[in-house]
Image (cartoon, rainbow over all chains, first blue to last red; front, side, top):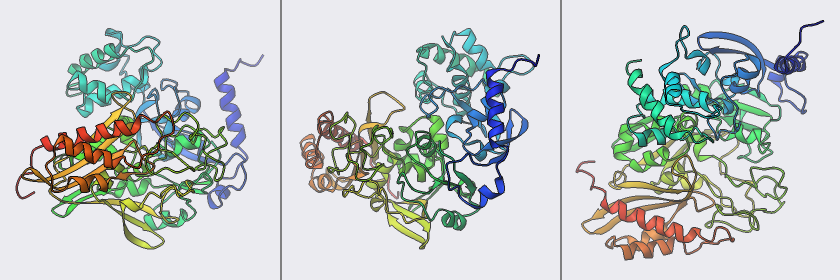
Length: 195
Length: 342
């Protein structure tokens, strides 16, 4: 019996098969004239300090590269249209939407995701604060909230409750855990000074 | 998303050459420039924009100095992110209208990505434009009609519209630029040239699929905002359906210079209201030489909305715009006078 494969592995395998016969050189010199799947291009992504060499269709977003190609599913796909913030990650230390960023455009830049926050099994102060303050219900928006919250504190935009609400407005929580998210950010803010 | 070829432009000249088939944003434009991507990638996912070639301008971004201020005015790089300029202290003190128009727009994540050049070229949020399952959209599909005129048009434009299109220009920064007489620095087939910002966005003119007056391959490289006593006494008032991270349903940009109790000079832009960034010379002319009283502000606001055309669900907009403008004018009057020498 062959080992069972997961849905994700099956989909990833199918995607790899679809691009294997394409010629990247031809695609680079002439714009595609048909709707056929284009050539894969080599893409180096540096995620949480480790460089991954991938071959991707140019349409692949950073979010899909993380989830479907690197199997790092911490960053979440909410709307996939830049409206909800669930996919928020840090690129070059700044919070951005990975669903609207093409992977091919961020090669060799420092990408930080929720998976890279804990050090030797110890949670980042913001992760611990979300647990301590009960800053979520379903938890789907939480990785994006935490990445955005860390940037919010580092930017100096977490001085007051009003500031936190304004500068966290790009992260929607349909469970409406907002008051506890504000409390979590205030807790972590004190521990992050100098961090 | 449809397949495309991806090219990174090494410099402006190459970018312009690669982009010569840009079609001012029409759905069938073969080439699109990629800057922040917050509009373009979104609309490609929605199958509204279908470029065959994407030309990435990232290398041009890296070289750009975001903000330069001197006694003649302000130069903003078109490749600067919204957040870089929103956080700049000299812009905030001397051109608060610009800072506010950026800080009140989008979300922190989007402001970290979006560039100023892309911001002024952002597409309308008209839901019939953004959803290709609606066949009738003259902007997306020339000659097909307008689904919004008899549709759900609550946040559609009332100024600068015609029977071909009532889409609203959604931006905030563009309203500040048109109020402050900004000029564009362009690079393209004609080399380097300057153009008033007010000439950038085309009128509907029964052909709403032609959105700008840029030439094929032409790239916005900078915005020049002339200095004047009105720039520091300025503000952007934005009215939204929710407190943050939302497009305007009405906004007003005001820059004011007073001579004692009388208005010496005033610049007024309206957002959330028009087909393109909207300057209200009619309202300005009514105020010059007069005291800025509530009665005079109300008369100016009436003049600003005199040509409004509504289509049902947006009947509320002219009154909201008048009240927005009156409040913005009276708030501008309360701002401190610029200090001497500025």
